[in-house]
Length: 117
Image 1: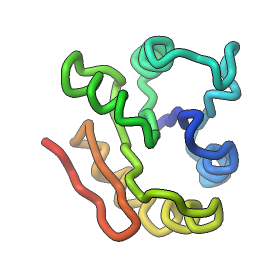
Image 2: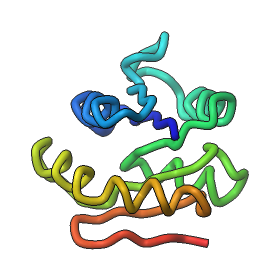
Image 3: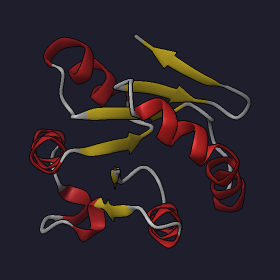
């Protein structure tokens, strides 16, 4: 499973996911870094079958209308600090991975995971 973490989320999240064994990049790792357009992020996601992890609802609109990116994890926690975000991912990562084996759009808040069909 491969991930692409969007600019609205910290690089530390991408590094955490890498440390757990997942092929993960952050938009800062791309040639245009955090200035990478959503269209280009979608293209990278599709080309490399990466799940986009974002807080940006523009990706939701794109996913619902044109089925891009490849797969989507929309983080709807509001503002939480990096340690809380990492703890949230640590607590839910195995469930997310299992769910992404059969689903393409998942939403994660501070207290729930919602699978959208």
